[in-house]
Image (cartoon, rainbow, N blue to C red; front, side):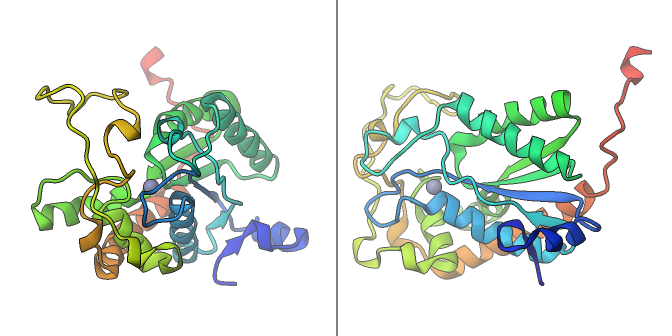
Amino acid sequence: MTAYAMQDMTWPEVKEALETVKVAILPVGSQEQHGPHLACNVDIAGAEAFALMLAEKVHPLAMLAPPLNYGISYHHMLFPGSLTLRPETFIQVLIDVATSLRQQGIRRIFVVNGHGGNQSALDIASVKMRADLGMRMSYTLWPVLGEMSIVKDQNVKRHTGHACIYETSLMMHLRPDIVRDEALAEGEMQPPLYGDVSTTGIGGFAYWNEITRNGAFEGAPEATAEIGEKIVQLALERATSFVRQFAQIDVEKQSLMHFK
Ligand SMILES: [Zn+2]
């Protein structure tokens, strides 16, 4: 076995694997529109593919947990094909999965998240897991781990982050089967909702249909599998070193020094 994937294993196999496994890697995504050229499962498809590569890199320290295909996607709901969980449900599912993992002796979870809309709920879940379950959960919006240096390389200012040059490139590399080459579309951006007021650093101000008419951001027609591969490799390097460290942290240790 080059990676442990819990859903493909028998219970005696899992039992044996648990002798070395310190971290559960949990892919999390969403079911939501991704413009006219990408299937609605992009966020979980990418997270699953990346999580498997990561599990191979850190084998036998980690075990893949089955993916959570649904996320928080209210802001996409006016496009057909989008489905959402309530944040409370999403957090509760994570807590229940964590509780089950804890019963099997896994106290550290690394969430490989493919969807930006899940981030704030993941933050709350991680706080609750530490406080209520004595577990550690870390999470990453994984493309961001690799994307930043590429964005800098290209030195182009454009609206990216969804069905854009980067996300489309990632799928061309990881899952070309869900890219509709014949439908590759430039984002049909809406005029800014707040005129020339800068919304950088301001959240919660728009639904997706208020930002883009076709659901895509910019640059998809320039996407290439090569850009995608570069992002994946950078992200993989960084995630691998993080998980190796994460596997060693002392979960029991609570710092009470502030209270002395
Ligand atoms: Zn996406």
